[in-house]
Image (cartoon, rainbow, N blue to C red; front, top):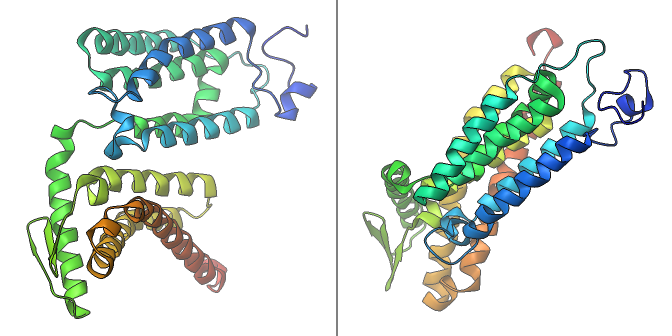
Length: 304
């Protein structure tokens, strides 16, 4: 009885939430999938055309994967199987088939985007095989969040990215001009003093905005607010918060370059500005969330 994969609902394993309660055959399957996708992970980290995660504009991929897997394991440990009803596992095989199709096509045609995406239906198949639709429902958000690790082809996002960079350049120019700095812009090229700054994708493009959106969505899910209105409001505010954080980063780099020279602006502090970007976005999200919580606590209960 101790080797079964579905212990009784009243037993210790169903309530402790300590292990993932994964049978041995499913563990072997998971290790096989891990070995298969190790090749893809290796390619993503190489310094070549397929090594997208080694490039600045896609370097958020490992972070998104780590966050999704952490949340998946955490939620899996919290899951308890409903008593008396065997899990519905039949949909795991179409999921595995879809994953294999994308993986084989990606390896054969050299399309790294297909290979990375294949990991998601494969994980859905593992979850369905382990606990059926109840477990899949429990883990639907971390499985959805895996989408943010998939590199996005440039032909899809470059037009949108150009639009965002242009408006960030306009906003930065207006702010610094109002502060008395000699600044103009031509498209996405900012001229401040004797220096020129190109607003690149890694600084303020759609991919950066995409990662900030992902962090905001992750925060909303982990915070688990019970108020639907609060969740919707925060979700809608993530986009302007991300835009503002990107703008502050470009202002920071422009001021560094103007006051300390191009070497400082493009050196270590240029990379440090990336940390400033995400710190600003996180502070804005938490601050607005705190303000909404403070406001809600002072409203009559009937109006919340």
